[in-house]
Length: 204
Image 1 (tube, rainbow, N blue to C red):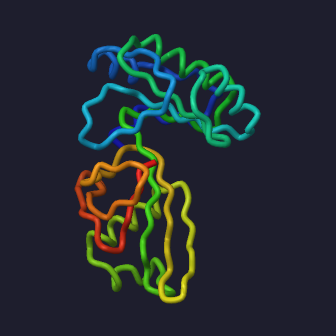
Image 2 (cartoon, rainbow, N blue to C red):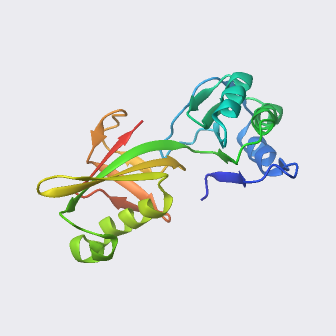
């Protein structure tokens, strides 16, 4: 993904910071920001968001205390903006110190809950028969990239709920974070696809 600067999946080898430093140099510097900031695809912000996932929640708590940022279970999320490459290195070092199973850095970050109304008993194999091409593309993208999906069976429909965390993909026409929207676009492989009446998205 274009917003993913590096993906660290092993702590056995010291990571090189060239991509982070170069990104900062090109965009004018960073300073520490002790909160999670969410972005839209059109944003030109120079913020970076670090997302570390730990195998042990105790390690996640220690990393959170060290960095002074947000934590969701075993996930630790820190953001910085408008400062120096050293600030980015400091956060990366402090998160790495407690041995994350995964450490990603984004130039654009978003957390979404996406609900899709499905015909009763629909499956992945039947999606091309049920939905138009754009909706099918969005669902396939979410199946591959969302960190969690739940299926709720109702009387006449099924509801597939996806939790997505990663590069910004959703533009909300109503600009109303915290509430479900059915007006906007989701970017899939560089292509902006309009939401159908079966899809509603909430930016957290």
